[in-house]
Length: 130
Ligand SMILES: [Mg+2]
Image (cartoon, rainbow, N blue to C red):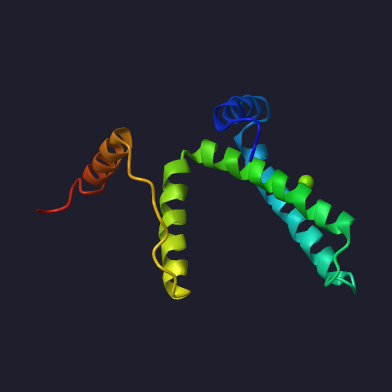
């Protein structure tokens, strides 16, 4: 679990986005994803990946951290945090179903979330016929 809470991370991300700009930060997402790709490829290139090398695992951990940081910034830049969470929940429920597992527990929606979902639903229905 992170010791720096999301609101604090968000404060730093906002500063980084202001300093470096939207496009460079979005391009950095791609750069970090490619570094993670490379670390995973390197892991499997090692002949003894069944008994993994600590250094290779640490490289994957470090690049996963970089990608996570950049994806959190991407979510912030595009304002898609709630949308991403919604997609994740749907996909995890679908995966559990495909695996024959019972539906994952979900925490109940908070009042604010219910209102936001209703507002979003109203927006989606704008222009649609009754
Ligand atoms: Mg990196």
